[in-house]
Length: 261
Ligand code: GLP
Image 1 (tube, rainbow, N blue to C red):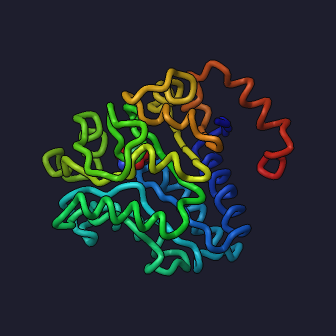
Image 2: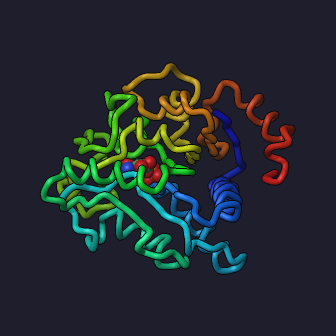
């Protein structure tokens, strides 16, 4: 795991978009794993800017989103499908036929999950998986006690997640109680992972995810097992990391990061 500490939320978004742009320029057929949430909004804005001004080309890339609520139609304003259209798909030259999200309205949800896994395999697996982190440490919607080898499946959301996401709905009662999510194992299969976190509210969970023991209670800790996982945080989210100075030294001195400094 590598941790990169940036001054603020905008710098996190800028750096993450540079990392994604580099991979997309190197491979126009990139299979990109996408995430939702407030943290991703600035990143998507930055990618839209790169598409418009630097001609970053999304036309051949394929995307798979981490998760979708059960019971919401794609057109529902609160669905992750709508989120992706609003923040990214509508503004870049992506071919909508190459974008994938689980169908939260599938009549056979278990079959939908198996099909989603198979589709990812058919495209050769995910090259770069973007991740946010929930306040209780979930990646995707892998709530506490998610098996560290789990695959795409339906998960019931915890009260913490329901209230965290309630602000995006009209009232807490409207937040769907279940979601289809890639499993922790599905995420670990991605060739690269890129986790973003910003703000003081994420400081404690970032310290646990990066420096704490691996536990299924906090699915983000499983990323410690990944061969190529980069965590980009702002100063606020980094404020509880014990080895922050070491991470800063690596970013400022290792040749791998030279072009991003
Ligand atoms: C939801 C998503 C997660 C995301 C999390 C954090 O729970 N399913 O994938 O990481 O929100 O959201 P935010 O960036 O708004 O803190």
